[in-house]
Structures are given as C-alpha cells and as structure tokens.
Image 1: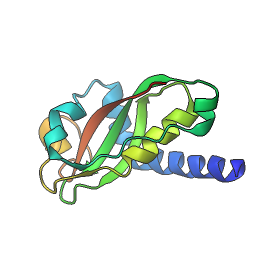
Image 2 (image 1 turned 90 degrees about the horizontal axis):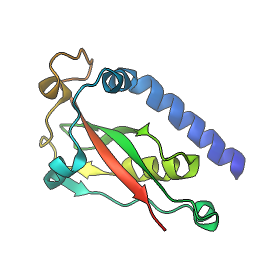
Image 3 (image 1 turned 45 degrees about the vertical axis):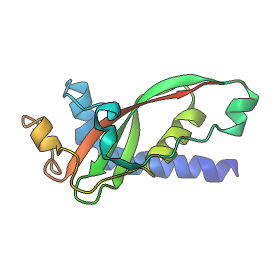
Image 4 (image 1 turned 135 degrees about the vertical axis):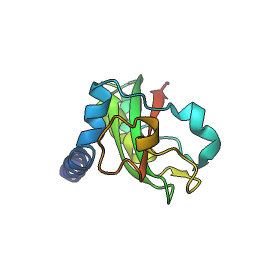
Amino acid sequence: MFRHVLLSLLVHAMFTHSLCASSREALSRGTVIPVFRDQQRFAVYTPKPQYPAEALAHHISASGMFVIRVHVKTGLVVSAWAAQGTGSPLLDSAAIRALSQWRFKPGALTPIGVVAPQRHDSFGKEDALLKVPISFVL
C-alpha cells in the first residue's frame, strides 16, 4: 500500500512538474494569479480534501497555498500543485487530490495570457491559473 501511494505521488509529481514548469516559473517571477475566492462564482464542483487518517492520528494540522491550472473551454482542472505546501506530504497530497477534481463553468475563467500578457506560456490562451488556500484544522 505504501509503495502504491509513493509511486502515485511520484508519477503525479513528475507529470505536474513537466506540464506546469512555465506556471511555476511565473509564480517565482511574481506573476499575479487570481485567488480562488475572487473566482468562486464560476465554480461548479469543489469537493473539500479528505483529512488523511494518519494525519488525524498524529494530530497534524496545517495550511498551504495551492495552484490549479484550469482548461478554460472545458472548466476541468489540468493540474494542481503546492505553491507553499503545508509541510506535510500527507496533507499536500490530499489537497492536490481534491483540487484535481474541481470543475468550473466552461469559458468563465480568464486565460493566463489575458491576466499576464507579459508571460510566454504555451497554453496562455487556453488555461487559467488560480491560487487556492487550504487549511487542515483539527
């Protein structure tokens, strides 16, 4: 079981890293990314993360800032990653798993190329980025 979870995390991390390298660079350069609460009206489905049993057993609570990349035409989340993790791989994984299921109204979000025209993102006309704060509190 542990090997399966570890392998899943590794595969997800590799996929996210390769797909979103330019988005991560944007964060490090200070590109403005809208916060989810400002775009909440466009959300259709936003399941909350499940608190991992192991984190509950060890009384782990923390907060983090996550980024989701959404395909504007479909409203589907393309990828999610921790911009500022919780400090717990268990909690980060739970947050990313939940965020990956989020859905938005098709065509409602503003593409990256409009929000940050100075960026040279290969999917700038197709995708939107949103920052999402998540807290795990006991």
